[in-house]
Amino acid sequence: MELPEHVDHLIVGSGFAGICAAIKLAEDGETDLVVIERAGDLGGTWRDNTYPGACCDIPSQLYSFSFARNPEWTSSYSPQPEIWDYLRRIADEYGVTDRIVFDTELERATWDDEAQVWRCRTSSGDVVAKTLVTGTGGLSEPRLPDIDGVDTFQGALFHSARWDHSVDLAGKRVAVIGTGASAIQIVPEVQQVAAHLDVYQRTAPWVIPRNDRRYPRLERLALRHLPALARLYRTGIYWAHEGYVPAFTWQPRLGAPAEKAALANLRRGITDPTLRARVTPHFQLGCKRVLRSNTYYPALAADNVDLVADPIARITPTAVVTVDPATSQEVEHPVDVIVVATGFWTTDQPVAERVVGREGHTLAEEWAGTGMSAYKGTTVHGFPNLFMLTGPNTAQGHTSVVFVIESQVAYLRDAIRTMRERGYGALEPRAEAQRRFNARLQRRMRRTVWSRGGCMSWYQDAQGRITTLWPRSTFTLRRILARFDADAYDVQVARPTPDREAVA
Ligand code: NAP
Image (tube, rainbow, N blue to C red; front, side, top):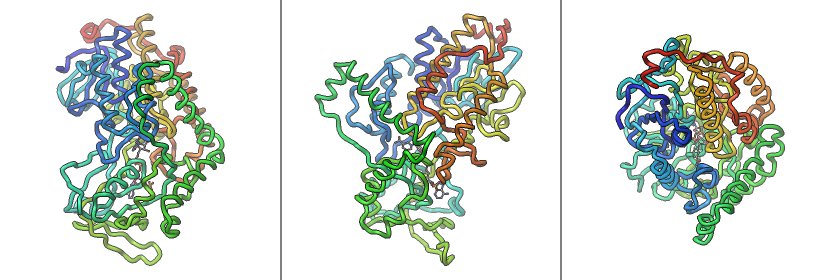
C-alpha cells in the first residue's frame, strides 16, 4: 500500500499493538486508517527476535488475541516462528496486512492545534492524521552495552534482537553478555554448538522451572472444536499468572515459595557448589523479571561453558577483558563472536523524541525532568489525539502484554466513538487528572518488590523511578480502561479546516 496524504488514524508499528488497534478500529467502521511499519514485514518483537531458542516465557495461550484464539499452538511455550506466523495469519484474515505501509518509519509527528491534526513526516513522505496511535513497543530498540572498545572488536558482534544468522557458531569461541530473559534462552542453544562459551553475568537472575509440554493432538483438537473449553483453559492460565500480583505489588515475602522453586531449580541444574554460589541471586524474586528455564543452569554447568562474573573492563579486537575487583588483575578472554543480550531502551524510547505536542516540545522533553508518564498509560496532556499503546506504566512482569493491549484498544475505540458522537476535533487529558493518576500510581509503586527488592532493572529510569510497570492487577487496568472518561479531558469541538476536511 502507498502512503496516503491524509488519513483519519495513523497507527505506528505492526506488532501485537498496532495489529489489534487496526482490527478493532476497522470493526467500528473506522476504516480510514493506515499502519506504518519501519521494517519490510509485520510482527514487531516477534519478527525481530529470531535468536536460537526464542519463545514466549508466558504460556502460549496468552499470546493470542481473545477474539482470535489459536488452537494450533504446538506447546505451552511456543517458539517465536509460531507466534510470528499467528500474527501474520491474523493480520491477513482481518484485512490488516493490506493497510500496512512497509519500510516506512515515523520521523516526526507534530500536532497542529489550528487544524487539529498530526502532521507526520515519514521516511516515505508526509501524511496528515486526526489521531496518532503508537504501537511501537517498550522492548523494540536494542540497547548496546556502553563498554570501552566495543567498536574495535574484529569478530562478529550482534544484539540478541538482531541475530546475525549468517554467522556459524559451530566450533567458535562465543561470548554472551547479559543474563536476562533473552540470554537464558540463547545460552542453552549456543552451548550445544559452540566450541566454548563465556557467559558474562553482571547480576545473577532468579530462574524458576518452566513447565513446558507439547500439546498432544487430542488436546489441540479439543481446543479447536470446543471453544468453551478453550476459553476456560485460557482464563485459568490468566488467573494462575495473576496470582503473582500480590507478591510483586503488595508483599514481596509472598514470593518465598517461588524463590524456593528457583533455588531447587538451581540445585538440580548445577552440582558444583562454587558455581551455585556465583549464580545465586542476591535480591528479592520479582524485582527483576522472573525467568523460566529448565536448561539454563545445566548449560552453565557444561564443560564448554564458563560463567564470568567479574566486571568487563573493555573489549579488544579479539577478546573481552575482565577485571578482578579484589586484585584489580585483568584477565583476557579470547573470543570469535560476541552476542550482546543487554536489553532495550525502555524508559527513554526513541519515539518520544519524534512526537511534538501542542506547546512545540517533544514527549522526551516533556518527560525530561519527571520521567515518562501518561494518563491511564495511554494519553498525555499537551499531546492531543495521541494514544500510546503499551505506554508508560502499562507493562507487567507476570503476564502477557496482549491483555493490556486489548484493554487499551477498548479505551481508544471508546474515545474515537465519543469524538464522533459529540463532534470533538481534539482531546487531551487534563493536567490535573494526569497528575493525580500518576501520584496515586507512584504511591502504590513504593511498596512493590520492584522498588523494595534490592535490584536495578529495566523497569527503572536513570533516576530510579519505575515508569514502565503497572503496580496493580491487569484486570484493574482493564477496568479503568473499559470506558472513555471524557470528563477527565480537555476537549475542542471539531473546526472545519482544509486539512480536517481532507481527512474527512
Ligand atoms: P534485560 O532483561 O534488560 O537483560 C539485559 C542483561 O544484560 C542483564 O543481565 C544486564 O545485567 C546485562 N547487561 C546490560 N548491560 C550490560 C553491560 N554493560 N555489561 C554487562 N551486562 C550488561 O534484557 P532481555 O534479556 O533482552 O529482556 C528484556 C525483556 O524482554 C524481558 O524482561 C522480557 O520482558 C522480554 N523478553 C521476553 C521474552 C519472552 O517472552 N520469551 C524473551 C526475551 C525477552 P543486569 O541485570 O546487571 O542489569
